[in-house]
Length: 239
Image 1: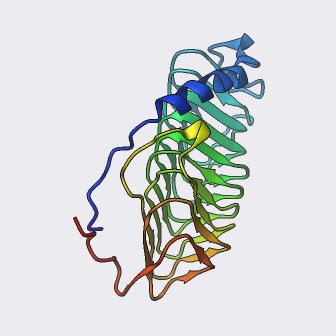
Image 2: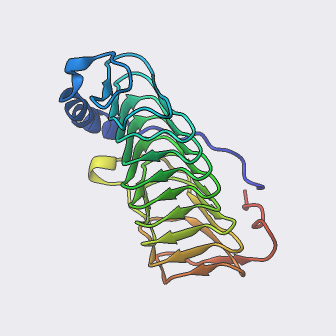
């Protein structure tokens, strides 16, 4: 891909407003801090959590630390404030939430609910699936032969839908306002590659650079003009 990587610029106001909500969401199960992954759940304030395969399904929650689920692991919700979440190949989870950190779904991983991020990327590998919505404010969202059933919603993410990826529920890029305040002056780059399918509206509430392959299938485009391209990658953006 010809595009230079752009580090997301955090929205300080969004983080300040969402952090108390995240902490409240995590506070409920904190009575068993530091427990091992069992059917009773895994939660802690500081430190990363490792969810092994072959143990009973549990909820994993931490404030400062990452959550890593092994290949073929099964867990309920995974929630952190400062840290990433990685779901191994063919692993299963009900929902994933982080304020500051990336989310990665490895090949064949499945999330039956939503993936929600404030400042961080979302990467779905081959065969990965999210049955609800993928949402973030800042950070790249990348699908490679993956499936999102509930649509993609962002404020300032670069989005790439590549390979035989399929998105149902469309793509929405919201205008920075209210909670999101001022996020970044950068123009998000949206790439729908050859073989990809986006069903539903592609709605853009502020300026984006939208590149759509002549071998992609997309729904109605609202608020932007698609730049068509042939071949595997779009043309380099104009400086």
